[in-house]
Image (cartoon, rainbow, N blue to C red; front, side, top):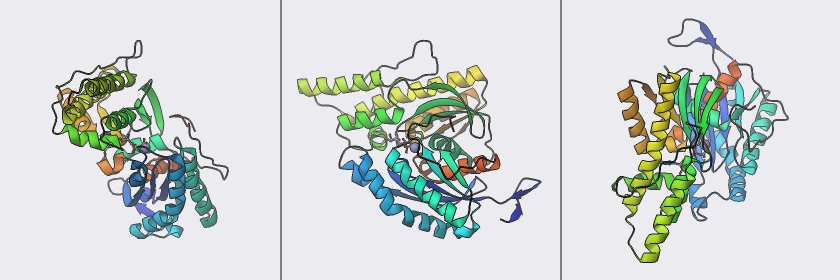
Length: 351
Ligand code: KG4
Ligand code: ZN
C-alpha cells in the first residue's frame, strides 16, 4: 500500500485500490476503483441477449453464465486497470439484495480471491452501490443529500445522511419503477428489458395522448405505487385488442413514461422541500431514463437545487459503483468475515 497526497486535499491519505465484483442479477461485472472516486477499469459482461429469449431474467441461466464468465471478467478488469492483484488494498463484492444463485457466484469468487491474496474482504449492499455511482463523476458530492433510487427491483426515496447511512423516507408499495417499465413493455410487445425500449419509443410519442393514473399512498406522502398505473395500461392494451383498435406504441410509451416520471419527480421535490435538502441525486437503472433525467433537471433548476446523476453506464448494474461504496465501508473499518453469505432479501440500511 502506498501513501499519496490526494488532489485538492491537504492531508496525506492512503491510496486505496479496490477490486469490486458484482453479480446480483444478469450482469457479470468487475472493476478497479481508486479512493472511491476514480474508476481505473469497469468491465461488464451482460447476459441480456440470453434472457431476452425468455422475456425476463431466468435465475438458473444467470447463475450458470456468471460462473462461466466471472474469472475472465475479473482478469480483464485487473488488466484494464494497469494494476495487479497484489496491489489491491481490498476485495469487495455485492452480497445482497439480488438473486441468490447469482449473488453466490460473486461472493464465493471474491472470498476465494481475498483469502488466497490475503486481502480484506468487504461486503457491499447493492443499493448502496447504486447510490455511490453518483460519487464517481461528481467529486464535489458528499452526504447529506436526497436520493431517488429507481431500479428493476427497488424504488426508494432516501436521505443519504452519511456514507452508507440512509434515512428511508419512502418506498414502493408494490412494483418497482423498473419492473413497471418492463411489464408494460412486454405487454405492448417491445420485449425485454423494457426500460430502454419504452424510453426510445417514447421519443416519437405524445406524452399527453392517454391519461393514466398517478397514485398517492394514503398517509405516506413519500411512498410510491405503480401497480394501478400498470393495470390501467394493461387494461388499455386489452381493450384496444378486443375492439380491434390500433395501439399507437410511441404514444402509449410516452404517456406511461410521463405518468411514472411525474410521480417520481413531484414526490422527490416535495421531499426536498419538506426536509430542506439542497442536493438531489438519482440512482439505479431507471435513472438512465431520458425523461426522468430531464424532468429532474428542470424541477431542480426551478427550485434552485443542485442535481446529480450518473452516466447511463454507472446507472445500470456495474462493479465500479460497488467499488465506490466499498471504499467508504473500508474507511469506516467494515470488513466481512470468511462466513460472508449471499443475502437475497437484504434491506437498505441492514448489514
Ligand atoms: O439497476 P438495474 O440495472 O438493476 C437492478 O438493480 O434492478 O435496473 C434495471 C432496470 C430494469 O427494470 C430496466 O428496464 C430499467 O432499469 N431501465 C430503464 C432504462 N434503462 C434501464 N428504465 C427506464 N428507462 C431507461 N432508459
Ligand atoms: Zn441494480
